Amino acid sequence: MELTSATSENSGVWESVAWELCSTYFTLATHLQERPPSSYCSSSEIEKDITSFMHKALRTIDELCKRNSARLPVYAYRRAVIYHRLGSLYHKLYRENSSKDSVNTSKTKNWKNLAELNYEKSSAGYLELISDAYVDLIHINLERTLLMLLYADNIASHSLKLKAYEKALRLLLECKPAFWEMEKSSHPTADHQASDSQDSTGRRATRRGTAAAGGWQCGEVADEEDVTTLSNSVLQRMQLLSRNFLKFYRSQRSGGTDAK
Image (cartoon, rainbow, N blue to C red; front, side, top):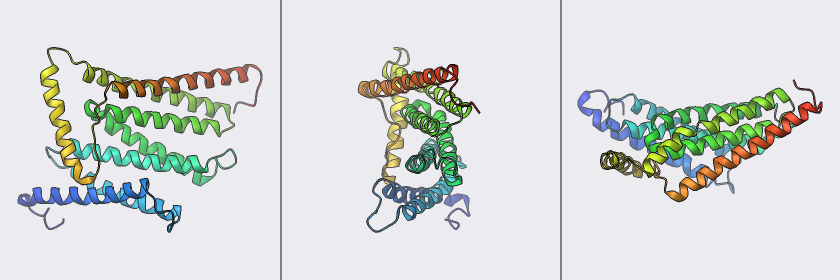
């Protein structure tokens, strides 16, 4: 890669090689994450390999994102997906190891912080590509909401619990732009229907064609069933949060545990 990037005439070759390398790292990490070889590897070894491959893919895609390329949206989406998968990995580790006894250990705190950090970077990437990544944005905000609810369930401090609930509510409200995009995609105006359809279809086709080599697909198009499912998921989280807020304030009024 260093040789091919040395001169401008090799730029296209370098870009192709870098993308294939990134796709290889990404595919290996995804395979380990979805089908972990638990029979002959410990979970800690698998997690270490996943993060190693993902970070190698991330370093490569960061270089690709610095280039003035027509494929930049594809690279930006790949980067957002990598952060999303890393966030999900740390979220899983936090969920499996968190309890009221262990939630304050340094390792558990670190997993939560890493999950939040990677989720935030992924969400920012999806937001920049919202016309194509609105489904991803809703999914990741639902995951981030679950992380906050899990954290709230495992802490005794009322002030921290309230902050977690408030952040979870903000995350759900941040889904609004994605639902607006989903509505526009489902019911385009007559004036823009043809041009928007061609432009969006072209972008998605380009991304899917380029992404195929990496064994993944991006820019999901939401059909009516997807819209209903996602809307119901957000609504259910809203209802759960409302109940949690009510329980919280009732316990405060009745002189519950000390609010620290």
